[in-house]
Length: 266
Image 1 (cartoon, rainbow, N blue to C red):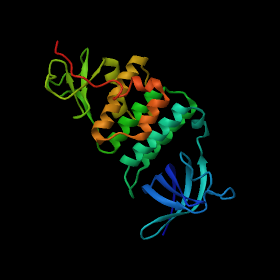
Image 2 (cartoon, rainbow, N blue to C red):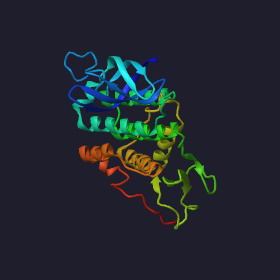
Image 3 (cartoon, helix red, strand yellow):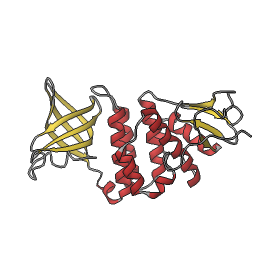
Image 4 (tube, one colour):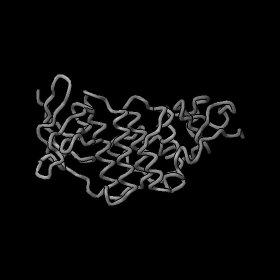
C-alpha cells in the first residue's frame, strides 16, 4: 500500500552509511517512522527532503510492520532556523514535543499546521521566542486532550483578580482568596499574562500568535506553560534543556529556572 502525504521531519537517525530512519509528522497518518534508503548519498533526491525540520511531500510504502520512503520532495527546508541557535533549539524542542503528543496512524493536520506556523515565525523573527514557545506548548497540549480550565477561579468562579494563580499539576486557576496554603505549587499571573494564557488555549488558530505582552508578562506566561508541560507529561526533554542553555533569556522564564511557588493569602 502506498501513501502520498505531506509531512514535517521531526527526528532523523543515520542507519549504516547511507540510510536514514526518520520520524515524520504527517497530515493524514500522524506520526510515523520510515526508512529512507540511500538518503545520505549526495546524488539522492531524498537528501534534503528527509533531513530534520524539512517539510516535504512523501510517497511512502506501508508494509506489514514498517514504512519505507519511496520518494520525497522538499517543500520548505526552513533554512533560516539555522541562522539563530535559539530558534533552532526551540524548533527541535517543538519536534520532540510533537513526537510525544501527536497521534500515530491517525489524522494530525492541526499538529502539523501548528508546527509549520511556529517555524515560520521563528524563521522570520517576527515574534518573541517566549511568545511562540508558550503558544505552541499550550495549544499542542490542548490538541492532545490536556486542555486546562482557564475560564475562572475553581473555587469562587471569579473571572479575574489582581493576581490569579495557575496550578500546573491540576490545570486550573484560583484567586488568592481561594488558594489554600496546603495546595500544590502555583504560578502567579497578572491580568495581562492571564489573558495571554487564555488566548493560547481558546483563540482561533489564525490569531494564535497575534498577542503582545511586555517582557515580564511573557516570562509569566512562559513559566506557566512550561510548568504545565512538565507536570502534565511527567518528564522533561533534552531539547528543552538545550534551549535553556542556548538562550539564557529563556532560563529566566523557565519552570525550572524560576520555581513555581505557594502564595501567601492576603
